[in-house]
Every structure is written in C-alpha cells, then in structure tokens.
Image (tube, rainbow, N blue to C red; front, side):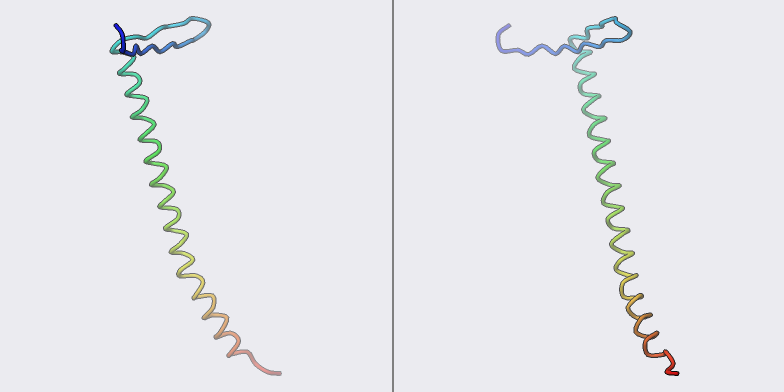
Length: 79
C-alpha cells in the first residue's frame, strides 16, 4: 500500500518487547494526545490563576502600604 502510514508502538518492560499495531496503536496515540492536551490546559489554567491572584494582591497591597506610610509620616511626633 503506497502512501499509507502504519502506526507502530513498541513498549519494553522487563526486557520484553510488546509491539502494538493497527487500531490499538491509533487508539493509544489518541489517548496519549488527549492526556497531553488536558495536562497543558490544566497548567495554563493554574498559571493564569496564580498570575491573577498575584496581580490582585499587588493591586491592593501597594496602595495600602503607600497610604499607611503617608499617614504614619503625618502622625509622627516631633520631640
């Protein structure tokens, strides 16, 4: 068969080789691709969540620190 690709997956465990071909190989490859996509999607969601949390914390903390420093400098006593 010219022009067709044959999917072959070779698994080696404890010195024994198992060759997976045909529709099982395609199914295993599709499952591996699906797992990789899910892992990448979860990683992206976690990274966006962390970036949003850090950004919100900085957005609230920096002005609060500036206000506390300003009030502290206005309220200090001269001895």
